[in-house]
Length: 88
Image (cartoon, rainbow, N blue to C red; front, side, top):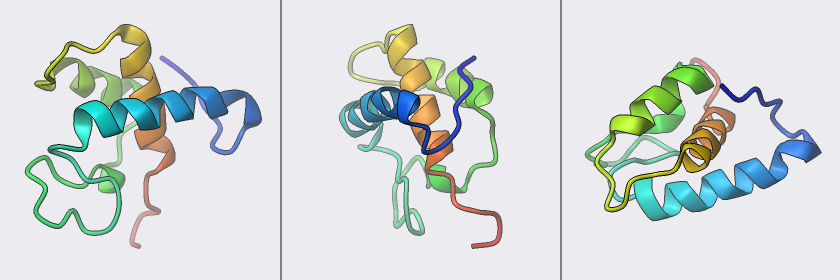
């Protein structure tokens, strides 16, 4: 499981990779901001899961091409870092 501190410079490459993986493999079904506006997979910025749990879900998501372990870890870090504060 990857541990990340949001905004930490040494984790920026992981977040950038996660952003690219999300755009390529996840954004077709999932939103990551706002209210989810009709996305079939829901708004992932509203979930309250840790990186490990997000990785577990990412492993079973139907993607056009299977994701590598590194891609799964990166997208989990990216999703976790984009999480909206509770109640907002």
